[in-house]
Length: 85
Image (cartoon, rainbow, N blue to C red; front, side, top):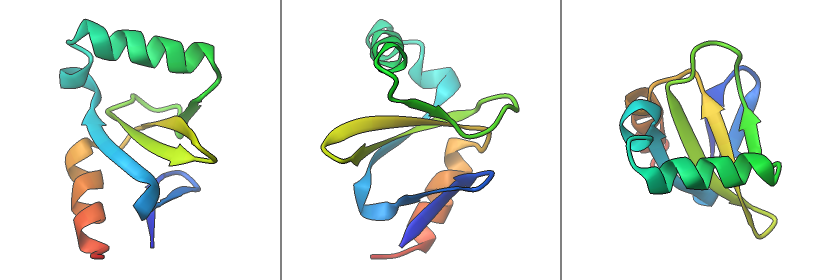
């Protein structure tokens, strides 16, 4: 099963590590540092050019990839749960 993140981007459900709210998660300096490092290493994929609301971390080819999405973390989480197992 795949989770639709916005635009034409889908991610395999079993590869997802977490779905995070961009506003609340980036309060932590550790999260900011992680996102900055991922950006520097070219592991960030911006799904949309609209206002970003969430980010999804997944494992692809043995490395973590961060997807920035315009969809809220609540919307993505509901979609994730609806996919079932």
